[in-house]
Length: 210
Image (tube, rainbow, N blue to C red; front, side):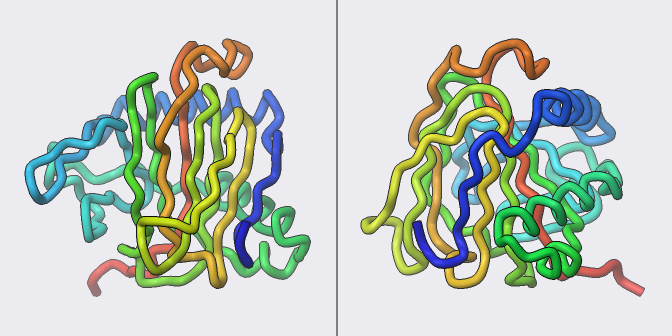
């Protein structure tokens, strides 16, 4: 698709997918609940989001969800960081790249059949480390573009349950989005009855105040 962008189909096995679904259910129940993020101009995102490690809201990260309930977000688990390192090593075919990867936040997005994600860049982090994206449940159309504009050139691919998508290097700040979800394509074997879960691991480059 572009230098630094890699798609690995069916990278997650069913057991791994079920474990992630169970973990996401726990995070969605608190301490900060899953919510529709409100945008600065008053719009509301159609996807529902819960965060781990750091709380994301448009243009910034914090340890507490001041736009929701003021609670401190759940800690980022070591097993999830290890999964990210394996993902990066497999995507780039480079164990050293995986060893150097230290994600400290995850954004968990839930898409129902009507949810969409407009073209955007992941640029609220203070790090250019790759983003690791994991898909579970319904298939989506994933639009991956260029770093200069929301328009063409871009490519549309299908991300299915268990797929891994990594973008780093020259592709790290490419615009991307989800124009369509295909309801009923996931299947119950993952533990997710309907909809799509997307888990993106990132390196914020942030540290807590001294």
